[in-house]
Length: 81
Image 1 (tube, helix red, strand yellow):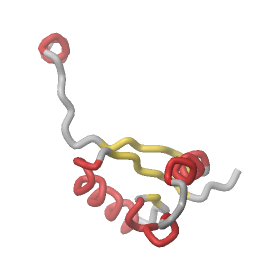
Image 2 (cartoon, one colour):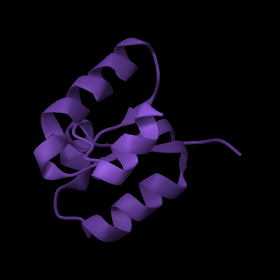
Image 3 (cartoon, helix red, strand yellow):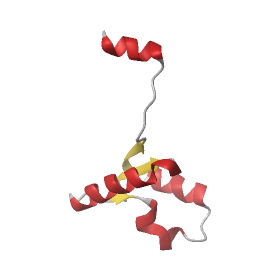
Image 4 (spheres, helix red, strand yellow):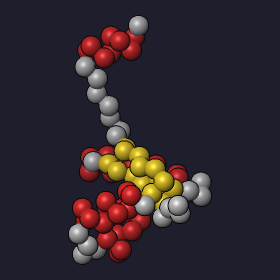
C-alpha cells in the first residue's frame, strides 16, 4: 500500500509550537509529514474531522505530540524504582 504521508502529526492546540518544530525537523530530514499548517490551503473549507480521518488512515504512522507529560505520584514512584 502506498502512503500519502510517512508520518501524520496529531496534537492539542497548546502543543502547536512543539509540533511545528517536530514537523519542520521531519520535513528537513526528507520525511513526508502531515502537519496541518503545511496543508492550510488544502484544508480550508473542508470538513476537518473527515479530512483528518482520511489523512490519518492514509499515513504510514500517526504520532501524537504532547510536550508536557504529567504523571501521578504513583507513576513517579514506579519510575524511580
